[in-house]
Length: 425
Image (cartoon, rainbow, N blue to C red; front, side, top):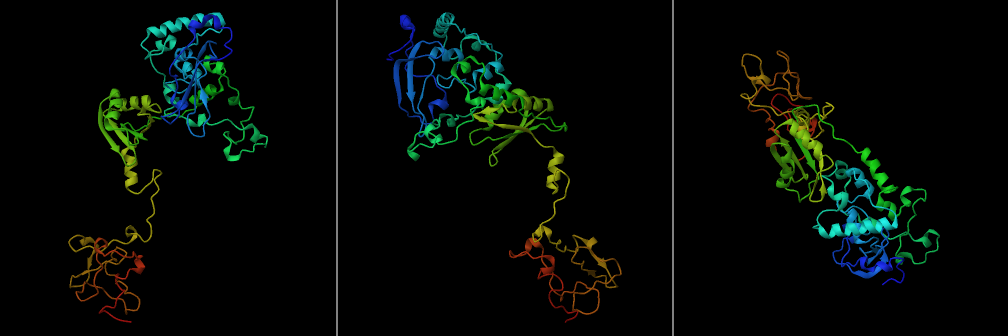
């Protein structure tokens, strides 16, 4: 028991005795097994000045010891953690939460009124079921879109780091790596975040952290509605391995009829197609930067139009620039010669024999009546015909054995690469 408890010794029946603190996940730490010391009536609450049971523990390795700062009654009145005084539901400062919910603080500041108000709140807490906040906070009808956008979805254990070593700042620390404090440059004293106190944080006034978050809320990006009215599909990213089809359907069915839900597990995303465009617009507005499933904040965007996907399939970018073929790949080689039945337009007849002449290797036949030049070193120009005794035709690319890919001028099976009956060197 503490030796000095102030002027509250006459009203000992209102002192608080508890078995476990009210903490957020960040303050409690990531280790599920921790040692926690308990000191009955250890200190006075920094808000109501009544003695309460103080708990002290270490949230993890290389972390500083933490303890409860306010009593449980003050914690329940504001629905905040007893240590960090952040909202237990959203993980935000009280000033940000009250601004989003349009709640005005009604806790009195004088000692007499504060004592009377606290006793009334204790009776209200005792009569409640303990599942909902009490006071004005319990009468709020719903949530705010701003709070859903700013809410923290995962614990921030970096907040439990040790304080900065003052001896290291002065260059006098001799502990080295064994020092339990941080060896880092301290925060600029002119930084507003360096000036914080518990009472301002609890009453929601002059909180620099809250001011920073409120400014961030005004500059958050917005989701623009596409001009193409045929788009009724939403892209949902960041699913992870836990989000299922039924969980997505349970959230989005309230906005309208869903036509299909396609989950691409490899990219951890999903595509939700609505039956009507107004349903898709409502779902995008209500879910953008506010959709949280299984503790994960999901990314919501509009799907692309059919025209944009068609350009990509044709090898064009969104700006309309054709992509150049890569030299040496099969797509960059000229097309293989086709049979007589498949492509008669690529052949032409010369002379009374009406024998189809092979098209040139560039894939285009020469104009009628023009002789095809022979390969270098094979004699005067002549008409090349489909001679069964001539050099073998190169097989199509799909039938060639795997091996090195050649440029058209380096293909060993092209016409003219071997000696033929029409001439020689």
